[in-house]
Image (tube, rainbow, N blue to C red; front, side, top):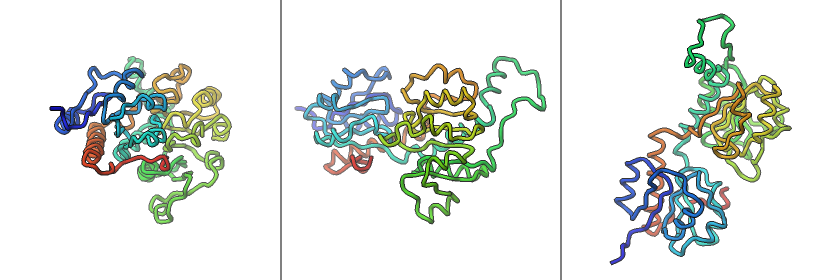
Length: 328
């Protein structure tokens, strides 16, 4: 007798506790070994699954969705960002899309502060010197960085993560400024002690530090471009823990090499894991391998949200974290 349980295909390995619970509830295909699926493997998965559980490394475009089988009714994304999924095409084909919002807010905000400190205090340079055994002892003028207290932080994108960054930065004594497509409510602004700038250009020109915390959409692609990098102070630092496509990476590399800005901290990149070699060689850049949400707690909570979305769908209800095209 055929199984009445949903066929769920997971594209990458997840925490053991999450995989165990998935196996208890559904007919699950887990990814082993933990490698990125090829386009052909994704197409095959879309063809046989009732539910696909992808992540940010899986590009699910209209071409792939055209190969989806009649069984596929839900793409339960493991992660908050869905710019790698053609949500509109999925909707037209009767496929729901869900995500895991809010789970990684605090973790990503922590990493933003870590990058701000790492760049301004030159932590990687000191670490490399110690690991190479080249430290000759303390000196008054060695390893001089900058103090972040009292500096102006401009937050680009004041959603959950942007606000979490603002709360942390205030504790460090920073002045909070932000640019957002919608101004925050007065009480929220007051709580964060944040100043809104309608003009991104004007804000960027006056900030000591910029934190990119907005999603990648057609309107935010290369929002930080060569012209805006030229507007920044030569002493300014920019960090990005959101989406790499928001920054024109070639323009940033040229600006760093030319001394147009003082430094950058990047956890995400315009072309995924393919990093501009000139960016890797820049001494005033801190690069991390997309670690912003990489905590045990966060990964488990993401999995729990995926399970709730699938279980709710299986019970005949709308997934609580369904993503609609109008939300993007």
